[in-house]
Image (cartoon, rainbow, N blue to C red; front, side, top):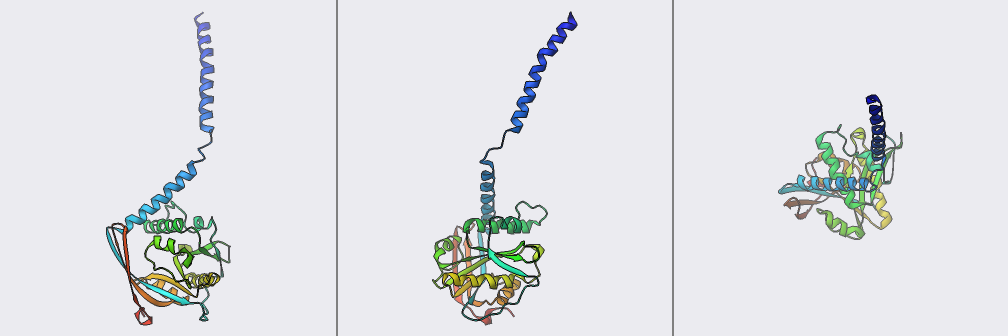
Length: 254
């Protein structure tokens, strides 16, 4: 009789175990919230913006060249070492060029990517990419903005208000896999020419006075020193002031 009672107990417990297993399985198989990807992307964006702010520090100053290209002057850019074409930026290009949370990259590279993606989040449209003709993958990105976007440019900070005949070419990035191939100057020259489509004759771009490599790349793309900027930021960029003086060829390092 004891065995029979024990059997009954086991039988009465078994359905409960099966039900618990089914409930657990049901809980694990439930789809994740449709809002989760949006929340993760929101957190990434704000993390990038915070990192960008903190990188400015309490007080920072910077000297930059404002280089200008006159699109009415004929210019033959030096071709890159690989075949490239230029097209507008697509939604998937940034993940290929600047993957997020890639721990194989150095800390400095991750910080640079965070800052550039924060810029992309703020600007939205106007991006162009160079495409590697060998495999069709993007290998360079930069943004071209016109005078109609002056309100956006003011919010970005650090740039002058554009005249109607002037465009701004900014935030160039080449992934490590494609550096040293002369892509920057060749792509810049091609992207700058797109400014003629919205009525610009001049294209401005800014380069730090200590960034000789990028300066030479801009010069190879047809840009010459036009202004010299002294920029002061205080309180993690809450106060942002720029002063300009006229520059020229003699101001550029040899």
